[in-house]
Structure formats: structure tokens, C-alpha cells
Image 1 (cartoon, rainbow, N blue to C red):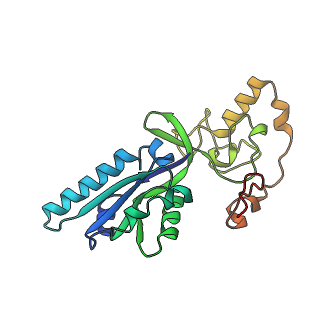
Image 2: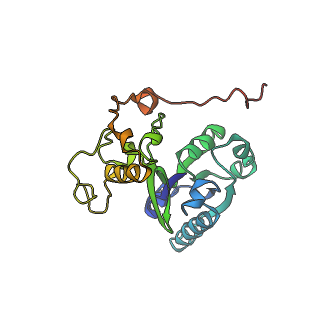
Length: 224
């Protein structure tokens, strides 16, 4: 899932300082799971800013709503009645959601309340780790399900680099060496032989180096 975290309160406060009525728009997708932009966080942010503005003698009227997903036109279309009645929108979605809302409601400025961080997962409650570099050419079958692109600090395809010590990356004692993990796992699988195959230089054209990407599934498209 996409992992995000809220921008500093002061930053969001500065965004909306000249507006009187604001829609705080949460997203029930990924950002709810990582506790950054769900219904609870949306209500808390709106309430905090409303109370602060009231103390400052600059009242703020807030409207809150949490869309099922902001990255899906079906759900973005359904918030028209909320958007039309406010001066601006504060989106608590990832960058995709912010763009979809801004694209749909072109007469309203949309402020991002979150910083989108990475594609990752929950390793323990309150801790999320980056696990996928979104490179567009998955080779996890060759590396025991451990991604060297994102989990190796040098994104080495033929590791280890020799800089790690006792299974820890040289950049930090808190970062496991991905290639140590890969070797250990392949040993468990009895497939160390697979690591003897030298991987060619990576073709980064499938990643962001190839420009904006698109996935088209003709079998599920609906003809207009």
C-alpha cells in the first residue's frame, strides 16, 4: 500500500489562512491503514485547526468527509456537493488522490495535507517499511522474495557489495543487509545455485525513467 504522513500542522494552517470555509477530505484507502488520512485523522485535523483559528479571532468553518477512495473517479464524482459549497479543499490522500480531486474540480484549489512516502507494509503496529520500488520489472522470484532494488541501499542486482558487517548495512545498524537476507533465504530454499546467475544491467525504462506509466486492461475496459 501507499504510505504517507501528515505535513506539519503549521504548514497546513498556512495553506488555508485566507479561507473561511474549508472541506477536509479524507480517504478510506491506503492512508487510513497507515493512520495518516482516514476519518479519524480528518476529523482531528479539522477540529484542531478550527479551534486554533477561533482562538486567534479568525473563525474557520470546516466540512469533513471521507471518500472511499480519492484515486477513483467514481468516488471523486460523488463529493461534488461538498466541494461546491467551500472555498478550498484540504486533501488527506496520497498525491494521486490530490491530483484526481484537483482535476475534477478545477475551480477549487486543493491543498495536500500529506506527504506521500513510499510503497510499503506494516511490520509492527505503528511501523511501516518500504518494500517496493515500483520499478515495473519484478525479479522477486530470483531473490527469495526480498527486493534488492529498494531494500539494498545501493540497489545492487548482484550482491552483496562487501560493505555490510554481521548482516547489517554499512549505512546504519538499523538497516539489515538485503543481500545477507537474500542469501540466507535462498540457502533455506536450497537454491543458492540461482544466485550464481549474473543479472544483467537493469532496464530502467520500465521504471520512472521511462516517463509517466499506464496500465491498460482491455478485458475490463467499458466501451463508451
